[in-house]
Amino acid sequence: MEQPPTPSPSAARPGAPDDRPGCEPLDEQLREWAFTQHPCALAVFDGALRLVRANPGMAEELGLAEAPAPGLLLAEIVPGPMGEAAEAALRRALGTGERQETRLPLTSGQPATAIPLCDSDRQVRGACLVVHRIADTTRHDSATQRELLLAEAARIGTSRERTTTMTLQRSLLPHTLPHQAALDITSRYLPAGGDTGVGGDWFDVIPLSGARVALVVGDVAGHGIRASATMGRLRTAVRTLADVDLPPDELLTHLDDLVIHLTTDDTPSHDAPETESGVGTTCLYAIYDPTSRHCILARAGHPPPAIVTPDSAVYFLDVPAGPPLGLGGLPFETVDIELPEGTVLTLFTNGLLQPHHHDIDETLDTMFTTLARPASTLDTLADRLLTTLLTRPPSDDIALLLARTRTLGTGQIAGWTLPDDPAIVAQARHHAADQLIRWQIPDTTYVTELIVSELVTNAIRYGTPPIELRLLRHDNTLTTEVSDTSNTSPHLRRARTYDEGGRGLLLIAQLAHRWGTRHTPTGKTIWTEQALPARA
Image 1: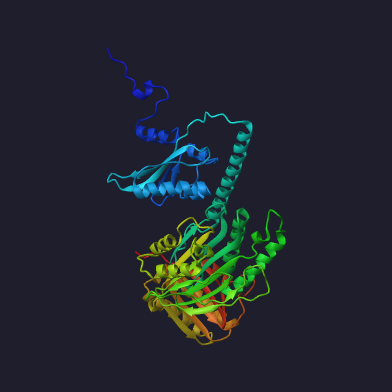
Image 2 (image 1 turned 135 degrees about the vertical axis):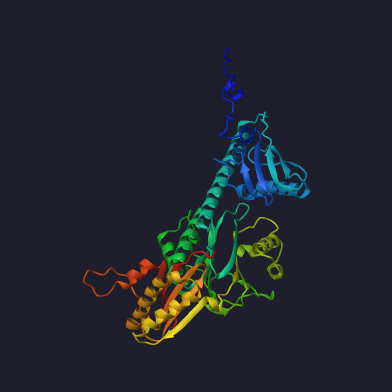
């Protein structure tokens, strides 16, 4: 007689986890449940003491609606002495490899343990913070309970506001740095510790035409959500002004006008100080050109950049100190300097120069000594600089931008001076086609010839000599530039059916990846960019 099939163990137990093929393994489910349903509050941190994961119990202990975002330091999640004490216990656990028993005043004042996490070779790789959630059986009188509830409500409100501000701040800062050929770049951002609140420091890296790159570092006065929001508006404005290729002094002038308008629109009140509309904001704006190795800078009340030459000499660049933004009526000045290839520019906000228990001269000496020490990468140099200068959470936000200069070689640049003669257009096309063959990108010849023909023709008809044609090959991009000495700019328009002209720029806009006009002290440059296939 045929026997009925024997039910599987999981089928015999209602509610048992499903370990059938295609489902998550049982042991993985159990580990997940053990972490999320553990009666203790748990938070796991990596070797740099940045949060990897926290369970719902820890979120409740911290007074948060949900688990904090990974990547934050505990002092950033829990501001003030309580966060510093917890972080100190974790740091001792990492350094000694031993448990650190303590009573940390998070939300409930429960005892806690910082436990080192080791790999199979007994190397400490991280730490776990465990808050032992023991029921409080002590009865308090109503006045004491009321005081505790009020204090806890204030702490939760501060913590949530700080978390919201940090989330806004990080969303407004660059998530990744753009890939470009002019500079090797790394960045760091550290929010203020303690009860100060997150400020409005920011940085940006903006690719420009002609393989150039703009570097921006700024500091909005004030702290909190309004300062972060103002920072976002100013960063957007800088990117918009940079897109029209303004020189640094003109860009800061327009930014100064914007801050004045923001101050007028956002009428100050007791809850919205005037400084949080942008008055007093400092900014440093620099443009580096890898074809000439020239860097043009201007600053509005911001610390000057530190320069590290290839032979390890360190000095502050002498950039004229313009006024902070929002004062109006005062000019900004630029400085133009030629930098050797391999020079490191160090742009930072003033939080880096506000250490505890040190005077400014000692801090500058330490900074210069650290920058002069050889480092294998810019990431190593940035981490070393922060570790050396900061012995505790900073009292103000810190934005740090390190950039090592590169140079486009002569093999990546080709240029010709053309006579003011319509017959030269054909010769300009031949120059471009021959150069593309030498660069082994003949597939771009047809489009490039159309672009060169249109731009050179326009320069001869509407511009003034001398006329120059330049091709750049950089970072999987082909740039075509035609320059003349007139200040008139072409404008894209839609030609009507019987118009004899007006279609050239429309054609260029369809063929090129990007195009635009760049004004120079001697005239203007019309440029286009074509995307090249990645090299094998």
